Structures are given as structure tokens and as C-alpha cells.
Image 1: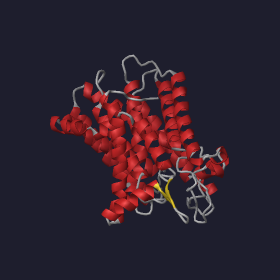
Image 2: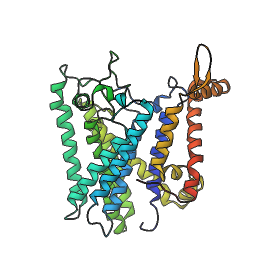
Image 3: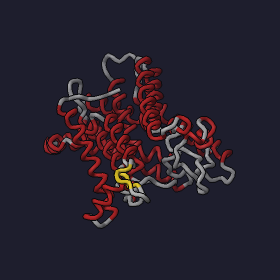
Image 4: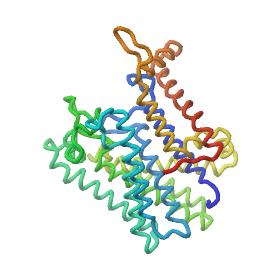
Length: 384
């Protein structure tokens, strides 16, 4: 593993990036397939698993570094620089979209990744003496889940007079409105009255999302321990049992009122998403273990192309999303944007609008694939 890439990680990360592009690139926002649209509030869809999967991959990569033979704690200066770089790029993209500092969205996807990365790296740096064991990381992970439960299902009800966590009445939304101000939150984070009241990538939910990064670290620690002992089947079986147990526990919590909610990153959502992430990694581990499966993925290289330049793929897809509304055709009474123009052309051939919208998302994925392919072929992997 020292001299070659972890192919299952590249594929898993590629799946996360590809999923993100499909979610944010429909031909028509009014014709999105249900599984490519986020849950409105409680509940979940496959689209809600994209961000947790990417954070899980961040954890797997951190685990690789922390498990290296010469690891003696993270260089905190590099951690700070990388965190600031991710945060700065995220803010820059939000500024391009907003067009004004006065209304720029301060939270965001890259900002969340930056904060989760920073907190996880700081945790591993603090625990590196003695060298962090799986048990130590699991303990920190459970403490974070306990904090999630207490704040979102105990103290949080002080900010929810009705006793129900709504768009507006929850601790995460209250903190975001207080810290950032509503003018700097997600413009679509609205309540039933149409007022902006929350941000799905806010501060408290991002702290909770650090659990997904730490779960990735824990899984890699487990992988290294069992593969060194030459027990790959034990590793796979452990992942299967973990995934099933966490899934059942999440469903149990959901049925007892700790509802699955990605926007709040609730405890049940945390456990459910970790379960799905472990399942995705397990599938790719088994595929790459098989010579036939590994050769097939290598031949198509779709996931690897996206997975090896994930940040670049995200930046390009975000810029495409921002400018997709730019006017392509201007009439006296209307302006037709690029997204609408392409969708109308596709819909004239593929008359079923939801299928046409999905096809447009596929076109965006293919365009990004062509843009990233030269980087992959020349082994140019852009990291921060």
C-alpha cells in the first residue's frame, strides 16, 4: 500500500464525486428523480449519502497517514494551511455565485469538509502519543455521538417551543443565524413562511459530521490490523457486521423519535450514513480483490478519474452549476439560460421529462470526465 494507490478508496471517493455531480446537475430542477433529490426535512434519499461518503473518504485518507510507520503527529501548520485553502476556495465559489460580499453564503460544502478535516486531524494529532488505537478512536467517536444526542435531543428542545425540531426551531439553525446572520445563510434554507432560517452545511451539523471522518479513520485502522494479520475475510466480515448493526440501530432510533435528518446531521443520520459508507467501501474492496472486477474498473476508469482529482472535479462542477443559468438566448420577453436551453433540446428528443433531466446530468458528468481524463492519464493529482 506504500507504493501504490488504494484503489478501493479512489473508487469510493469517485462514487461520492460522481453522485454529487448527478445531484447538482439536473436538466430541470423541477424534474429531478426522487433518489437524486435531498429529503425535504426528516427521512433520507441516496442523494443525502453523497456528503457523508466524501467525508468518510477523508477519514480513510487520514487513517492511512496516521497509520504510517513514521507518523509522529500531524504538522499543524500544514493542517491549518489546508483547512484555510479549502475554506477559502469554498468562500470564493460562494462569492462568485452571490456576486456580492454583503450576501455571500458563509457556510458551504468545502467549508464543511475543511472544518471536519481540521477537527479530525487535530484529534489524531492530540492522540498520537501513545499511538492512536482503534479503541481510542472509537471512544472519541462515541463521545461525539453522545454530544450529538444531548445537544439535538436534549438541550436543543429549549430552542423548539413546540417540542419538535423544525426548520427554524432547532439549536443548529439558531447558532447559524446568530453566528453568520440570515443574509449569509443558504438562500433556499427557508421555513414554511418562506423566510431564510437555516443552512444545511451549518456550524453545529458540521461538527457532528466529523464523526463520519473519524469513522473512516477507524475503518482503516481496522483494515491495517486485520490485513497485517493476513485475515482479509475477518476484515470483510467485520465491515458487514458493522454496517448491518449501525443500520439497524439508526432505524431503531428513528422509530423512537430521534429522526433521520441530514440537515441537522442527527444521531440516527450519522449512524445510518456511516453504515452506507462502510457498505460502499466493502463493495469496492471486494471488487478490487477480484482480478476480473478490478480489471473492469481499471478499464472503464470512470470512478478513478473522478476519485483521484475530487477537489478539482468539485470546483469545475460548481462553476458549471453557477454559470448554467447564464443567458444563452435573449428575447424581448424572456431570457433562456444554458441549462434550460439544453434541457429543452434534450426533452424534444427524450419526451419523458425526468429521463431527459437525468440525461442532462449525465452529459455534465461526461463533460467533467473528459476534462479530468488528461490529469488522470498523466498522473496529475491535485491536492490541497
